[in-house]
Image (cartoon, rainbow, N blue to C red; front, side):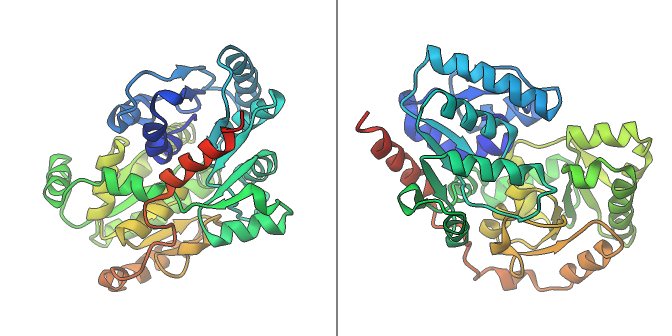
Length: 354
């Protein structure tokens, strides 16, 4: 794994594998708030094998990670390689496993945005077609894999490991209140996260997104913004730092604290994939600031998809006008919290003959 979301979603898989698993961190996320603070809270125990390939371009990271993993797999010959999601780290793991003739398990397989402008879309497709076992979180993901010709014997419907991650990490109500109070936040607020290239790499788009949400903040609803290191760097490089004055900015939070903020928020606005899943477990309303999503299961129920632009503030106001209690009875499309157990059992079956 290489990023904070992978760590969160594979935490229970790591725990269930125990001493049978070797955790390798490529270094894609290396800031303490995005990695070491996260894994410490997840209780990973022993330090992972660190490759340290972060801090460079996507192509450089991919090449360096594949080469480092090739060496790692030669030294620690695994029975199988497990990757999660659609990151550069996941693609590197898949390519290195294929080069070393090792079975590959892809957790969270079959997600598709059908938007080739997203680098992650290419990663997802490549990993799925290399994988010996595609652990698909939903029937929609299964259908996507079948439509691309992936054989049924390589597909397993597992649910999404995010469900048990949320269930295990979410603090009790009293602790959530202490977290919000301890951060000096008001009782009623909107929670914002923003980090994807489509929203941050073009200064005009970044300005538009923050200007629209600044309008909402000016109307009396505080916007709490844990600023991702990547987004902060883009703001500073573009000379847009003053736009943050409209928001209550805080540092990125460890997983449990961030879930507490989501649970307490009146509304969540984000371009994160994981947040789209988490709100379905927390029963919260979300406005997704993106052109497309690989998680259509939550659109129209828990989430509204709105690209960056002048419609964003109106979409937020519309979501705020809805009754949040209406979501309480809606089931999450991502399963019942047994995904990690099913994934680990499938890994055992895959490697047993070996």
